[in-house]
Amino acid sequence: MADPTLPLLWRHVVPAGDDGPKRGRPPKVSVDEVVDAAIDVADREGLAALSMRTLAEQLGIGAMTLYSYVASRDDLVVLMFDHVLGRTELPPLAGDLRARLTTVAEVQLADWRAHPWLLDVVGVRPWLGPNVADRYEWQLSAVEGVGLGDVEMDQAITLVVGFATNVVRAEHAVRQAERQSGMTDLEWWQDNGEELGRVMAGRDYPIAGRVGSAAGEAYQAGTDPNRELEFGLARILDGIEAYVARSR
Amino acid sequence: MADPTLPLLWRHVVPAGDDGPKRGRPPKVSVDEVVDAAIDVADREGLAALSMRTLAEQLGIGAMTLYSYVASRDDLVVLMFDHVLGRTELPPLAGDLRARLTTVAEVQLADWRAHPWLLDVVGVRPWLGPNVADRYEWQLSAVEGVGLGDVEMDQAITLVVGFATNVVRAEHAVRQAERQSGMTDLEWWQDNGEELGRVMAGRDYPIAGRVGSAAGEAYQAGTDPNRELEFGLARILDGIEAYVARSR
DNA sequence: CATTTGTTCCGTACGTCGTACGAGAAAGTA
DNA sequence: TACTTTCTCGTACGACGTACGGAACAAATG
Image (cartoon, rainbow over all chains, first blue to last red; front, side):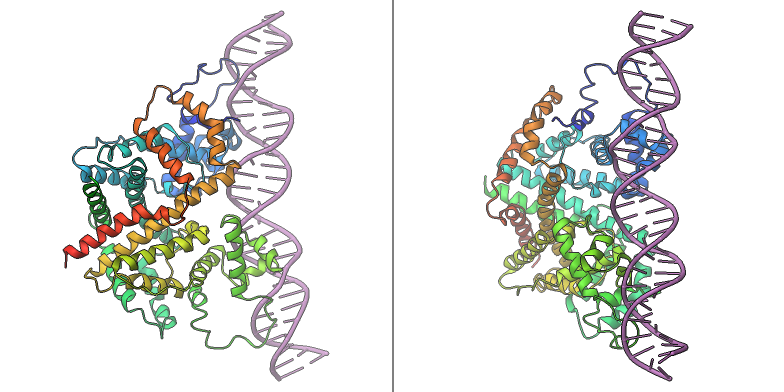
C-alpha cells in the first residue's frame, strides 16, 4: 500500500538501489526531462494549459508514453511542485528576527511570482518531497531559538509565508482576468464605468468609492515590486516582534 | 461593448426597466433558481463537480437551457460568488478597532468555511456585484476614522481578510486531499511513514521534525474552530494597533 | 544465429467536459 | 388561424485524462 510517488519524489536523494533495468527498450526521455518540460509549459501558459497531449508533443513522444514516467497528471504536478522549489538556492538567514523573516517572505514572493501556477496546486496531499522539506526546515530556522513554542513557530511561519503568497495571488488574479477577457483593467473600466454607475444608482459607497480608487491608483503605479509586501509584512513583523519581546 | 453580466449581477437592485417580456415562451426556472441550485451543488461536492449537465438535471431542464440564463459557466460562478455573499447578514461593527477587525475576520472565516468553493473562484475579474460591494464597504468601515490613509485602509483589510482566508485554505487542503486519496492523513502516515523514513535516511530535519509533529498534533486536537485564527490574528492586530497608535 | 524475456512506446477508444448551432415548442397578438 | 417573439434542448465538436493491449526494441539466453 506504499505510495509509488514517494520514491519518485526522492529519486535524486535515493538513486534507486538497483541502477535501473539492464534489459528492455530504453526510455526516450527521463523523468526529469518530463518534469522540466512541464514546468516550462506551466510557467508560460499556466497550469490549466498543461495537458498531457501538448506536453507529450513538446517532448516528441506519444501522449500515453507519459504514463510510463508518472502515474497521473496529479502526480506530475506534485513532482513539478517539489522540483521547482529546488531550483532556488535558499539564502543564509542572517541578522535579527525581523531580517530573517523578511528574507523568508521575499523568497516566497520571488518564487511564487516566477511560477504563479504554484498558486493553483491545491487539493494534493502535502507530500514531503526533499525540496519542500528542506524549505520548511530553512523557514523554521528563521524563528528557532527566539523563545517561541513549537506550535507558535509553525504558526509564525505560516503567517508570514501565507501573506507573501497572498500578495502574489492578488497580482495573479488581475493578470489572469486580463488574459481571459482579453482586455486590460483600464479598458474594462472605460467600457463599463458608465453602465456600472447607472446600475449602482441609488446606492452609495462613501468609503469604498474613495478607498477603492486610491488603492487602484496606487496599485497601477507599482514601482518597486517588493513594495506591495511592505505594509502588511511590517505589521506582521511588528506583531511577532512584540510577542517575542513580551514573552521573553 | 458593455458587459452583459453586469445587469445580471445587479438584477435585484435594478429590476430591469421593462418588467420582462410579455410574449414568448415562459421560462421554466429563474436565474435565482439556477444560481441557488449551483451553490447547493458546490457546497456539497465542490466547484469542480459542478458541471452544466448535472446542474441542469438537478433543475429538471436541458443542459443547453442553462445558457439562456447565464452566458457561460464562468459567468455562473461570478453570480454564485456575489449571491452567496449576500446571504450572510453583516453584523454591526461595534467596539474598538480590535473588536471590529476581529468581527471582520470571523465573518470571513465563517463564510469561507461554509462555502469552501469560494477558494476556487479565481481568474475571474473582480466584478463589482452588489454584495461584494456592500461587503467591501462594510469591511472598510471597520478601519474608517482611525487615522489610516486610504491606501493603508485597503491594505489593512486585505491583510486581515487574507489571513482568515488562508486559515480556511489550509483546512480545506487537508479535507480535499483526504477525499481525493480516499484515506485520512493518519492512515497515509501509517502506510507511508516507514517508506518515508527509509527514503529520508541520511538527511535530518532537526527543527522541522520537532515542530512538524507538534503542529500536526495541535491541529488534530482542534477544539474551538476559531482557535486556528488566534495566534496569527492576534499578531496582525497587535501590529495594526501599534501602527495606528504610533502615527496618531 | 534464433528465441525468449523484460521494458518502454503509443494508437485507439471511452467517458467526461464546456458550449455552438439551429430546429422545435409555447406563449401573446392580430 | 397565422404571425411574432421568446425560450427549450437534441445533436455535435473538439478538448480533456487515461484504461487497455499490442507493437517495438534491447539485452539475455539457447
